[in-house]
Amino acid sequence: MNYRHHFHAGNFADVMKHSLLMGLLAALQKKDTPFCYLDTHAGAGVYDLHGTQAQKTGEYLQGIERLDDHRGAPPWVASYLQGVLARQASGARSDYPGSPWLAVHALRPQDRAILIDVQHAEVASLRHHFKNDARVAVHQRNAYEGLTALIPPKEKRGLALIDPPYEIERDNYPQITKLITAAHAKWPTGVYAIWFPIKQRAPIVRFYRELMNSGIPKLLTCELLMQPDDNALGLNGSGLLVVNPPWGFDTGARETLRWLNDRLSDHPQRSWNTRWLANIE
Image 1 (tube, rainbow, N blue to C red):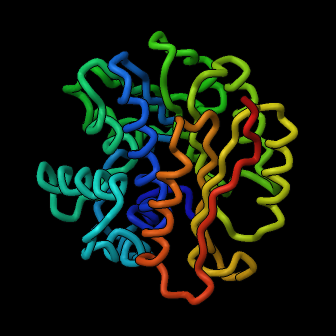
Image 2 (spheres, rainbow, N blue to C red):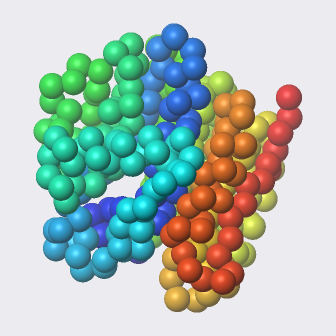
């Protein structure tokens, strides 16, 4: 997988991640008190699906392009698609909004966003897109130290989305496990959503085992598989691990994944699942 998200914008993994992100934000908005959204690997914020990089892979054709007929879409998918259309209405028809844009678009006046990226070009893009929004702060720093340095936020409530470049991770994603454990120790009430690719099952099993041994009391994993996870050709599926999922999130996630699975893949062995790795009250 190429590190730059321009190649992958709008693919099936984005559709899944962004739909579930809408569900997490909606849950936080059930209370009137403000919350903080943190995006640790925020990227450029907006991508051009007609650009050279997106056209080179064409991944969006098996993602957002398959949702033209979205009749009967679950609420979180409908909210996600409304966000995409809002960006295209304010920018270009070929624009695809990343998680920072979708999240900020969904925030209320009292909420706040912290966007982190280490790449100069991505940070410049984020600052351009959000220069007139006082609710948004952009930080150029390494997420592996930046997240723990910036939590807990002053609001005490919030969500951190962690979507790292997995080409620099190895085996059972030890850097991610270390980051989640450290962040949870410093901000145990925060909600954390960690995206991860599913290429082969064995590394995922080891990743789950390490997390289950971390002592974090509430861990829910969501998976969307476009084909069997023993296919050696590349990205077979997409996962989202949620620490401290809001009440009812698992039910909404099942509805969302079921609907997306039937529309994003034609493979007879496509599948989806949610699973509690830990659920201690």
